[in-house]
Length: 232
Ligand code: UDP
Image (tube, rainbow, N blue to C red; front, side, top):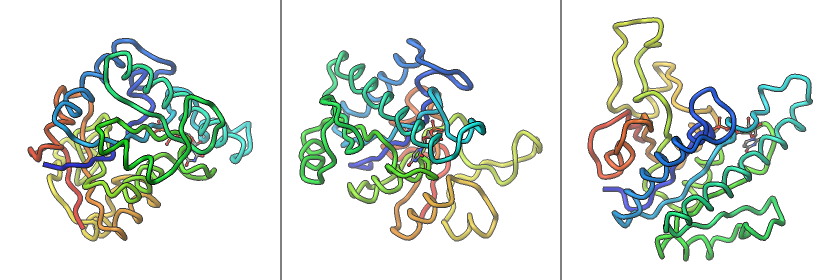
């Protein structure tokens, strides 16, 4: 069982795949999944994306650095939303970011973060890496390394990584376990290249799971076989 986990959530977990905004049903599901993890005493950090609000790459009318700033603001909106929703359900949660003066966020300080994790607060990181041209996958890899997480879990809509595109090839096989080196040799896309390379360099295991299967997140954390495990 992993004790400290960094969970990367796509913004679309708040809205439903391909949708914008916030869906009560999806959010209720998300909160239940997080609650199960917290009740197991797992120390949980979350990096949330902004696909439900704004993705820089979807706006070709704006220059990339402006679009990315807007995207990062989207992650702040989601971080705050998630914090409030978790607290409403009685789950201790804090939102952390140094890219806003909002009094609802605490600034990024290692000692504070450590204290919150050890006292079983869900620590939600907003603002991505703070830099344009990156994504929240990379922010998740950095935070996982910084907080010394035992694993980075990338919550997606597919149940892991396949040896070829399952939409194109019906005989595609899900890979249960693979090393970073093998994934590169086979040309598999696990996450953004920047994120992948950081996890490889700092030997941070990654699990890719289908978040929308009930209890799948907890199963991955307690070491049951699910999704794809990428190991150093
Ligand atoms: N973004 C950025 N730098 C970062 C993280 C995010 O510029 O370090 C911007 C980028 O425009 C991105 C958007 O924020 O498209 C939302 O993040 P992401 O696409 O990772 O969200 P997700 O797809 O996970 O919901």
